[in-house]
Length: 266
Image 1 (cartoon, helix red, strand yellow):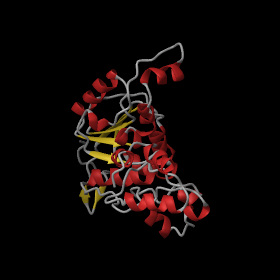
Image 2 (cartoon, helix red, strand yellow; image 1 turned 90 degrees about the vertical axis):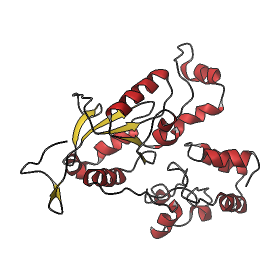
Image 3 (tube, rainbow, N blue to C red; image 1 turned 90 degrees about the horizontal axis):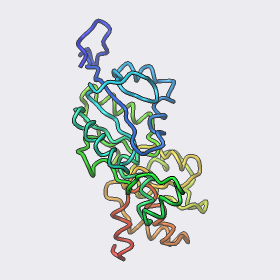
Image 4 (cartoon, one colour; image 1 turned 180 degrees about the vertical axis):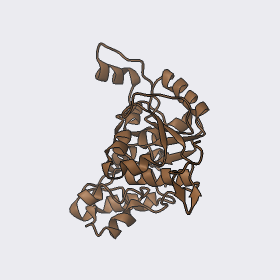
């Protein structure tokens, strides 16, 4: 941690530590890291809170001396397991950044198919050593999750600020549907579009519904998500159970719910 200096940031007059942070990517599109760099309006303020020591998308210097590690992507190869464990060993706080790191993300869709068939379809005659896609917590302890595909940069900045000043971090417990109503959007179901807003964890400010696109559940289930009511709404609006399952399976956050539906359980 950096020591106190004349120009150091403070919170209510108390000097704020400036943690060393690092960003890493595993199997992913790296879109979550790009979201952080895209936030030009507040990027300099954000960077003033931390000392970035490893961020391949933004700098060439690298260091394994860091306090907080943000890891984007899912695990699909053995070498990624070893790399993740090394990161875990170095970091005081390990943050799963985005849906792939939290749930397996889009990558885990391939887990539904025969792995050899997937390799042939994707890589043809140039096979790559790749296994099923799994979230970080299957291999190491995770201290914190930042949900979304991609993550919402304003939420990342709020969480990092809370980490720096030692404030507790709480994710919304209510569903996206509440944010959508607060934003005075027309319900997507009334426009003929399926939407997982009633059961998905809020915090994105109803990003997709604001653009008239139904929620696909990239942030995983809200606390006490009422899946039975979700199934009833979908049926009443004329959408099949397979349509519901397609959405629930997309990012991997609703795996338990999908398993129960397929078994015919409530």
